[in-house]
Image: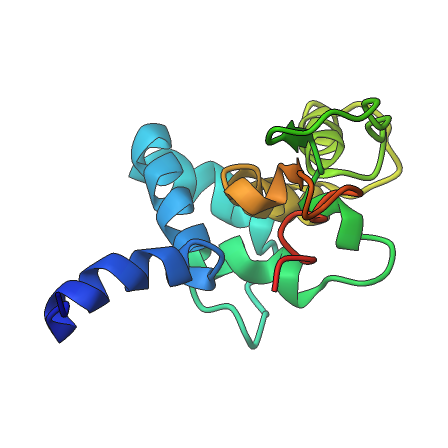
Amino acid sequence: MMLSSGLFVLLVIPIVFQWSAPAHMIIWDIAMIELGEDYIKNKIWPLIEPNNTSPRYYNIYEYACWADDAKNSTTAPWHFINIPYFINYSKPLPPLPLTDNVAWCINIAKDTLKGKPTGYGITEMLRFLVHCMGDGHQPLHVSDMYSSQFPDGDKGGIAFQ
């Protein structure tokens, strides 16, 4: 049975966009609805873009993608955590990192915003918080599948080809 092109698009496009900029923007939009437009405009926006000088980011939605654009060797691990997921496979549980992962980044960002000394700036960590809340909802950013095909894990889907 052949799928029509319209049905194919409806089935495949959502899968493709799960790890894209629009997915981050959609998650941020949901947060904005919950927080309220006035709160975003008066409290969040001045912290995310204090000088309103960014040449690249024209609205608050675009900052949902900022952390991917600013990613470097230090911050790259802040976008994921490989929680083991076993499929008909048994292996001793590998240790989970206590720092430098998406859960740690969210907690550091929250501490920074509460005024606790973390060594990071409010603007930077609010931008990471907006982004990492999206990353934390991406299935391959929070799992590492172990199976007979991937005895050492699929590294959040990276090893899957």
